[in-house]
Length: 104
Image (cartoon, rainbow, N blue to C red):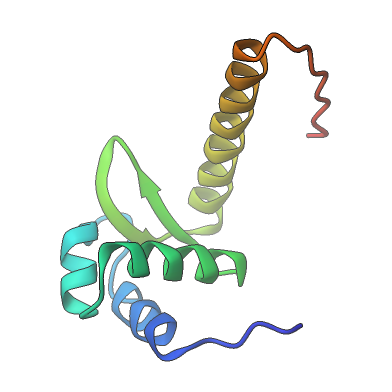
């Protein structure tokens, strides 16, 4: 099934188009300007990222922005490492052993 951009996704994409690595929009400002809930904004960002939009967020820098290819690759690497760390921690919490190989 092919993904179709809904009205909220289009609105959030248009808002984010004005932001780059030097100018970010906070999550609160984003959902306020988009006139939606925080949860709806996060879900929209997730859908837009999956559709190929380079929407970056970084814990050391507040807010969201449209990133360059290099920023997007760094963001994806950070997210991948964080997910693997969470998976590893959960695996050990449950007393199981899991082997994961990641191709780089």
